[in-house]
Amino acid sequence: MTAVIERVARSRLARRAAMLAFPAAVLLLVGAALSPGGATHRSSGHAGVLTLASRAVAPNPLGVRVSKVYGSSIPASVYGTQIADLEDQGVNTRGEMVSDLSPLPARAFVKPVASYKVYAERWTTVAQRDANRLAQALARGSRTGAQSAWRATWSAYLHLGAVYGLFGTLNEAIDGVPGGLPRGSGDPRFTGLHRIEMGLWTGARARSLEPFAVRLTRDLAHLRRVLPSVQISPLEYATRAHEILEDAQRDLLSGVSVPWSGEGVLGTAAGLAATQEVFHTLEPLLQGRDNTEAVVRSELLLLSAAIERIRRDHRGWPTLAQLTMRERELIDGTLAGALGALELLPGTLETEAPSPIPKLPGRAAAGTP
Image (tube, rainbow, N blue to C red; front, side):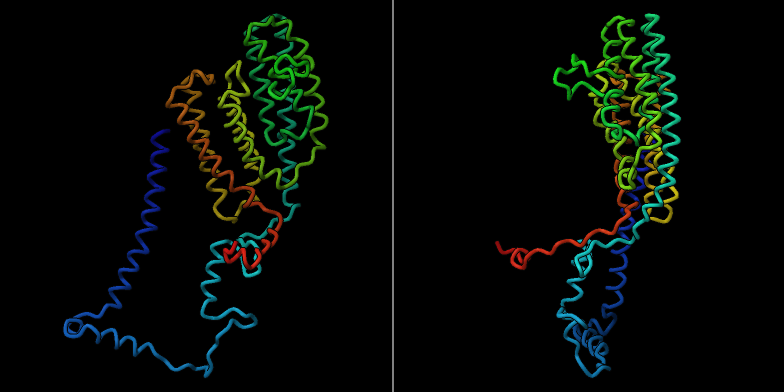
């Protein structure tokens, strides 16, 4: 996998070198064509230049000289420079953002969001089933069985991905962490998956955690009922494809959200699966809109291969503490590449034309304090 990544990097460098070399070659050819040569050049340094200049002069067929751009007060002599400056800023002459992409109609997102809801409902059913297994293992007092069922339940819940944060207190009850609670991990509102995680990996009696698992099962059943009615706007949906793995980078691979089990790699794999599903539903909308689809697909494949290699080498999901330095660098590097590509999605899938940029006052525009 490391070799693949190195080949990708070399390929990118080669393309950049070619892009830089081509303009230089063109300039050399143009210079050679315009440069006076042979005996003429040796005998008189000015002859060639004067001859070319005289031949370039032609009578003005219009009989008049245009000094301003038609319909405006812009001097013709500086028009090209002004337009070039505006293009560098990505705006037109009216101060509006310009783009090669026409906005998509909001209705284009109806089918992708509906497809994702079907996917999310399926994983909610899986999470509810695994939560029942977790409650049963806790009731038997089986710590090992309960830890295995906890991993399965938590991973299934993270597969929902794009619907996180849309359920308010319900999401907090299921997957909330104690950081924002007044009494931290001892707060009575800390009840969900991470409360059970804390108990299982800190030596609490398995049977003492059963009430939390029973409540978790009820909360997941409630989530399954309200999921079909949740509303996701086009911008929100396009942005979630990036935010899922951004959260994984910040909260899971850092260990912040899983301080007791250390299952950050497992959680990141679940987030990647959710991201791939969002991307899959959006692919029809990405057709012909820049090169975003190909870039995102390539980077997600690299990240998927990196995570799969780590899982295969460990013959299962390693904890964060079990990762080698090389494995940590591999997953961090490929995740960064995926996030860079996913940042393109909201702009590529914009549904509204940008508003004109307010013009600065004349004194401020001229740089006068």
